[in-house]
Length: 400
Figure 1 (spheres, one colour):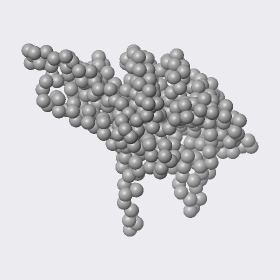
Figure 2 (cartoon, rainbow, N blue to C red):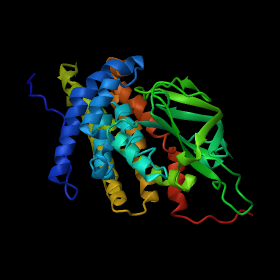
Figure 3 (cartoon, rainbow, N blue to C red):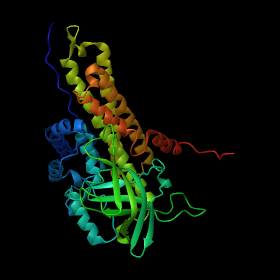
Figure 4 (cartoon, helix red, strand yellow):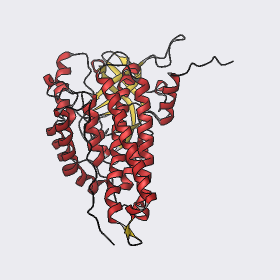
């Protein structure tokens, strides 16, 4: 048998019209950090459901990953959704939870009314000293956030919060929890989302304050931080810690960027499967040939790679629209739908190309699949994305 030199996986680059030297340098730096610092930690800790170590978070803070979209005045990079998603893809390629934890800074939990306090929190956010958790969903309100029932009753200068929140990642380790609550019931002519507000819960890391208890949710993937079911029992929050003025609208606006960020993470996971397969298919031999010689295998890999490139181009386009200030609810839903469904399928193909070895924990491709499968669910399920898209394409006839 004639042997050939193995080919390394191709290295993604920012292509025109989005290329700038600064983006090229940032992408290379993020890729190097992901490969050298994140991937070894992921390979060690993900199999035992370990959390991202605090020293690694500190290294991420030193790199500036928590303040990509925070303005330079407050110590951030002053960049946009494009760079934020680009870095997230690189980090998620190594470990999705690391590509995710950066979303829990970026100025989150800083929108209080007092400008001095807001400035202080923005600086802490950019430094990775204000990393939070977002509590939106409830046992009976996931896709339907207008159905949030957690109550916040005003008592003087405080709100008294009672209710349950579910799927709150990083809640115990966080510096704050941003909670969507109901302060009033909607009136007869109001939307169901009327009366919702967002409150900022300040807390110490690695614990819950009195009035909040948490139960960890055992997940099949997305390790690196613990996801919690939270119970609020008369917990008091200062009225000054109300964030923004339009609770539901603010949450929806945030979700547009979150969905493109999820698409970028999905691309990172699918790309990881492609890269791992390129190496494996040249190394694994059957019938006296590398299995990468067989046409069926080669065509599967070709389809996988093409779909990753397609999704990357789409998320970059939508991130660019966000940076231009364009309304893009439909496009954000489209790219979230397309990229996450692609990632679940491509990582599944990656397991198939690894054969029996893919169904073990000896190779990283099973981790890519477990994490990719979740991307079709959080930040709005694929079904919700289809509803958002369809509602912007077709009118609804009155029900008779």
